[in-house]
Length: 285
Image (cartoon, rainbow, N blue to C red; front, side, top):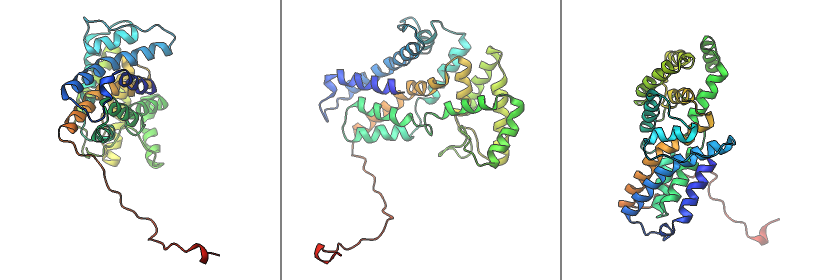
């Protein structure tokens, strides 16, 4: 995430036309948005390979967006079912209203800063484990459980101890995340293709118990975590993949904000001590 944040900032530094404060031309910002959409997967894949001591692989023009990412990461394109599942996940993550990172991007845009700054701000917000990092936390949790046979006892203990179980609940969806059935469907197909049913067997047990006990439903991060793991991605790649998708939502919101802009400046409610009178210096002991 640090690499993507810094790389996008570098793109802004090199784009001299973006540095005229307040001078936003929609057609030019759309070009910049498409350029970031195209380049961010290459940034992520290059960083992935460099961290493993391997040479970066350039993108190929004859591959789709999803195929190219696998090619740049692993040097090959997997089965069509894997590519389709990945492509579906990107669509589901692409845009989701006024979530924390999108709101952050719109606040920055409302000051008439450049579009690169809005995306850098969005990346910074998404980096937090309560937002973009949730899918990574889900997979760490599943690895900790280790075996579907242990999943029920693990969840019972977690609920008794009032632990935060990542991948469940949503500030908007109180009766279930509408994106989950689609991602779960592709996750189950992945499990069949890969011949590894363990993670989604665990998924079913954890989901069932959480709904029965707390009436709390999974959010998109819950099926996305094990799905990305089955695709072969390292866990610390999950949130950068989120950036690949959400760049479309962020930039669309930024362009919309600028069409009828007013600076976003919420008020705060002060709940501290009441006003105190200043004692003149001569009267202080």
